[in-house]
Image 1 (cartoon, helix red, strand yellow):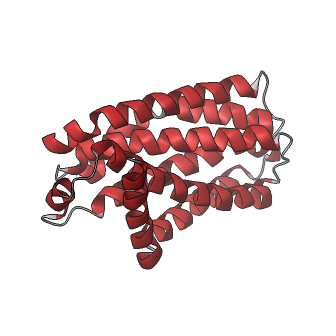
Image 2: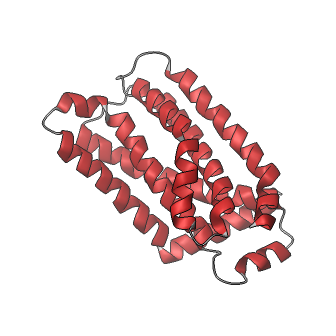
Length: 222
């Protein structure tokens, strides 16, 4: 199964590396969101500093929607998904591979946005391990949930508008948990950031298990 997952992830990442379409949309969009918020809140640097974590994850979440849509647009051409079904790949491995490819793109995006919040918002990192664990758990959660709901909408003509409507409410706990944990890592929050990180880890494991279990069924239905 892991070999099949690496095959799927490698296929998606090679396509993105050669086309530069997905990352070429995600990075400018997310950076533009940070810049616009910086202009909007700059007169009050205190609010901007306190809102850094939330703005960072809002930008990441919206850019993640683009990554999910792009991941399934790769197989939207007639006959491609049927060929994938006939390839004999384990559906669970197919899910893991696509989720892994999305997660890699999100991690690259988060690294770029991390530089952006330091430059634009003068963020002061005080808990690097907490922030790293938060990014990993939140990224896995976004990628797993996005892959699961992405395949649910993949066969529909309105998938570009349906994916955000399905996914954003589901990812509300990720946005909340990642924001609170990141606030603690940046020294702007109260409470234990590790407990919020634990919530993110539970969400990531839950949706990974759901995806591995139901991805094949949803693929057949769509």
